[in-house]
Length: 150
Length: 442
Picture: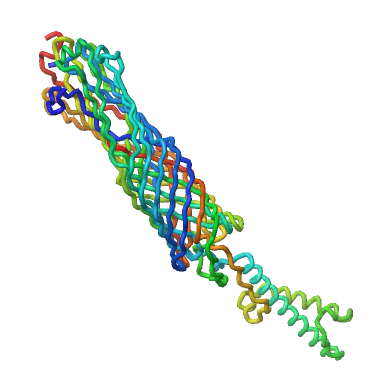
């Protein structure tokens, strides 16, 4: 017997767990306030809609205050929009602007929906070529890894 | 040499060729929009491949004088690859095609066998030959294709390829001394290899001609709950897939005391653990720009990925008195789980499909089991021939993928990750109990 004889197996290897192809199904939580998915044009239209309503509300507030002020001053009723108000009503329009800003700050989409600005309907997109019909050519590049039992 | 007679076998090596490399090629195909949400078609492609690998192992020259090893180098490469496939795909609401594909595959596989043994071959210290074959098999896979303009689309695809079995036989003449000693004039070396391939690639397609036009569809109304296509906010999900590793392994056999074992063995081969995975991920997206998304993602997967190599080593004992005997070494490697924490940055295609790159940290458990076997009483009594090592490794990962909004809150993605966990080193020391006649001084 060989006392103290031994066999030593050493191994050194590089580990790369791999190259994996993963397929995942993902659930998305609701973003803050339910942010909408809008295309650029949808976004523009929606923004115009809100701002249009805000302007409309502002006009209504200013116009209403001016009318009330004129009635208080006993002047002639105002039949035109606020931008046509003469200089004697300067203080009231300033106050009205403040109210208008408050109104704007508290204005939300729901208010906008009440008084939407009418926009032209969005046109349908023009007929586009169908990429899923017909011939195609292309290039590709990538990696390959084999496992050949030898 | 009579292969059926174990006394004339020099050694058997059982391992995986895990050749890795890049490919680049071209494809052509035809699509048929068979139904509003379904597309069928055919596609053919051909690629140049730079996929190659060498394995070096040793066989025993059982009764050679002096004791010696016969080294065998087996180099295998895929020169080119082509496929001809059918495709069947489903169009997501955004217009990305999620498809399965399958058909024929063919490719050229080259193999070089070379052996080195002192005073063994008639032609000199080295004998060898080159072989090549054009092989025919099958392929199956899946992918995602997204239009990015009227005429252009991009795709990401995975293909599994099976080209069948390649067998080569090398007959080498022995030197006069070896022929006289062994009693036969030639030695026959047979290599049998099953050729598989896993391909991950991206492609760019130009649509030459279109038949008909797409039916214009009304623009989608803003949907407050359609969060999957916002690419903003938190998400969670599950994933499943496969993993294949390419782990070069270097196995020196050191016998002690060295005076008793003048020749050791060194094996160089590649472990290729393969298996499935299933897990889950959570993440967060931020739409930094209208067409760009950044985010972070963490995932954890259970892995069932393993591979074993069995190498027979030569124990070249004392010259002229002790014949060499074979030592079997089984080297098993498995990966138990895998986690990553990564950043993502992606581009949103016109149809709201997200194409992204990702990278970050990765960690995994690697388990190695070494088993040495030899005819008794080579090892001491009661000695376990098996030693197991566990390593929790931290490394890095990089990859890319494509994620397609499916329904209001749901999306599906196809992803590739390359993971590097560094290296592991194990040492197993096994006491010997050799017959007295093996001892030089007994």
